[in-house]
Amino acid sequence: MAPAPEHTIIRGGRLIDTTKRQTSAADLLVMGDTIAEIGPPAMPAPSGAHEIDASGLLLHPGLINAHTHSHGGLARGMGDRWTLELLLTASQWTGGNRTLRDKYLSALLVACEMLLKGCTAAYDLMAEFPMPSAEGIDAVARAYNDAGMRAVVAPMMADRSFFEAIPGLMDRLPPSLQREVEAFRFAPHLSSVGRMKEILHGWAHDRDRIRPAVAPTIPHHCSDAFLTACRDLAREYGVGMHTHVSESKVQVVVGYQLYGMSLTRHLDRLGIVGPDFTVAHGVWLDHDDMQLLGDKGASVAHNPGSNMRLGSGLADMRGMLERKVNVGIGTDGASCADNQNMYEAMRLASFASKVQGPDIERWITTGEALDAATLGSARALGFGDAIGRLAPGFKADIVFLDLAHPNWMPCNDPVNALVHVEDGTAVRSVMVGGRMVVENRRLLTVDLAKLAHEIEEVRERLQAARGPAKALYDRLEKVVSSFCPGLARQPLHIHRYGGHPPAADG
Image (cartoon, rainbow, N blue to C red; front, side, top):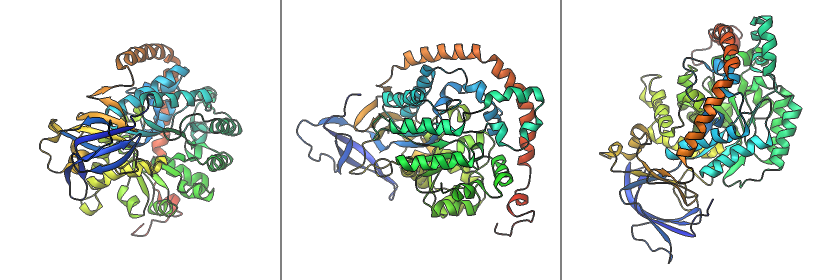
């Protein structure tokens, strides 16, 4: 990519004052990739500075996606009524037969969508089977770099298949299906960890833009030896660790069956929970789990859209914030949330809190939703001191919204409008690290017409190859859709409290 100009002055734009709930005119001086100064209109600028006219535009920090899956780009819209467990069952159908180019294109596609909708950084838990490859992770990293956005790339890893991870599920399968799901086995954990160590040791991408992390996919899909090896690897290389925890009630029940405690407590017992650890979803975290996460400085990536889409439930964001958990907001993957629109994710985070009860003090404010989608997500990605704010010393990741768009007529309260009204259609331009990547609603880094043509060719090829995997899913779906809801119907106090109902405040 071409470097950012040495000096850029952004004139005539308006910034949001979240305290006063209004906008104010200001100029921004950007030196290289960093905001150097914010001052009054017509403030002095270095001679020869590149000037950007932001008249009639509202500037806000780039939104940050705390949790997505780039491999979902090519699986968008493939399912309707499926739970998390059915989504996992469908993985060979939705994600199989991918070439290295397919992995690159899927990541490029989701990066393009995010940029066009005001998102400048993402935590991507990409998938490869049966274990990560250096080439695959490099392809995804290159896609984000080519699109022009920041990313943390964390390949999901496991050493137990979905059918092995849920007690009793394999036994429910007829022998013929048991033999067929043998193909779902992951590589032994020593192989995956060894490969990941090689990838971390040889990381060649600029860590200010693209950095790696470790992602054991779901705790009970991983042996304790695998989880502790991931912990040690993350600490050795100073990277984050991200895993799906208590996303569905099935996961909670299985955690108690296997460990006699919540998944969060089990992870803490293994020494995993800490400031560089992110829980994905956390729909079924109890207050003790939240307190533990808050006390240890951990994060939760809140994904309200996919939580509702998969019927997983409504996460208690207020409970997390009360217990000092750092909360970021994510979209989840396009295969289970269908779009990568962080404006929609903020809106749903607000709305999800409001349908949980009539006590408005428990509802998430628009200011809290905006903070979570910027500062909170930045901390979860490990970029907390660099992005998520428009302030001197922070990277110039800036979204320019058109105040003449109907979304902003009238602009009564810009914070409310940004969270409850904006849907991405008013995005005029997007800057990442001082460099324009979207200008006048046109993506400058990728030829979208060419991408659309290539994506369609991939879709046709994959569709032709998916027949056997789809037929297998249809057979498995009948078992999973009866067995897993049966687990979910179990009262949690049977597991949490030894069969006794909880106390009134439990």
